Length: 293
Image (cartoon, rainbow, N blue to C red; front, side, top):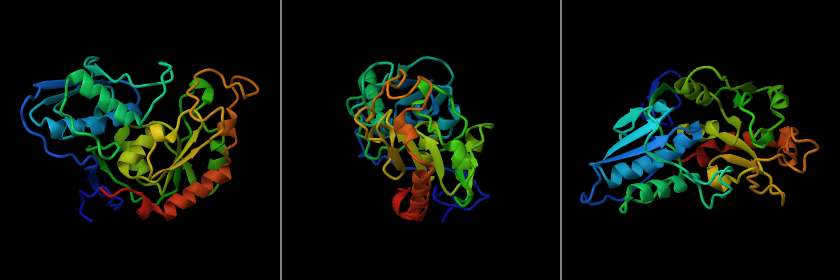
């Protein structure tokens, strides 16, 4: 494969990712705003969620200057759809449904972002998003997808651990699994993840970066949020469908736990063997399931 192919698994070449996911029909060049400014100062996943909308703007309004104000500048580096990147806290805020708003998502968060930007910026001709997958363009040294499976081990505890699978230590005790390093920047993380045959993580930023990188991923959802709102069909999403936890979106202690700091049953009951089986399945079906660039 050519060096600019995001599925190239050569372990030591410098890689520029061009993941063209959003196939949009050309639009006429009239009524174009001179500039659009968007604020992306939340988590890594939130920044990645924005990328398909940026493509939609670039292809629908090619003469409009797009400014992204963010604490994740690397995510937007070299994007042909971004003209200026700042760290200022200005521009359209992506206030999509989240646990603090008390409003549940009704579709994938990427599509909520599209709605917000379209309405806030008056982009009446903004083309729809065909493929709900993040994309990146920054350069990094791509691995060969042939190393041990990476496991998310270090993460911030919030919402009483409702997104933290409690069995990672046991999984790391098994052969073929290594912790994902927490030091370094986004490019170093991308290099590590693309060197793994698969990744095991909680719902969050690593999952979304894996989607953009085309890395096989097993995502342990539990029951806090539904995969259809933040997940990808080419990943293995392990979610509980208990009545109390089918996307509970509850930021308070789980009533089903013995005490407020215990993992909720929807995560506790997902066994290590279940995750190992999912890793083996996604690795064996990798070429079939990963979307083509």
